Image (tube, rainbow, N blue to C red; front, side, top):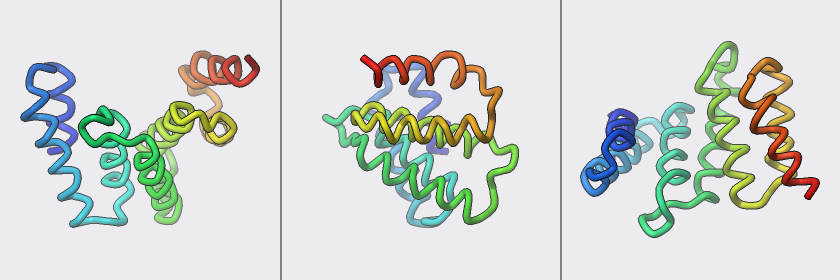
Length: 136
């Protein structure tokens, strides 16, 4: 339900006050009920990553949650053909980039390319731009 509220918010930004709060509250409730669920950890990470700092967003908290989500996906063997696992890794790389931890972002991208070498957006757009940022 948290993800649906966030999706609805992406379609109608004027409902930020109601849908944003609803999405965050539902994500935190899910985390209380299923603290080791990698999908919930990733969703909770999204609430920190995409929320402005003024409203409680935190890229570093998102990194913690994404890292634990990845760990849980791997520990629970939920990695094969799992788009949520792949998306969490990509968002982890983006969070590292946003916090200027470019070497860590690159390492996550290399891991991802080892898993899904034909991930077109990563291979052709995101990773080359990250490498350019590192080399500049």
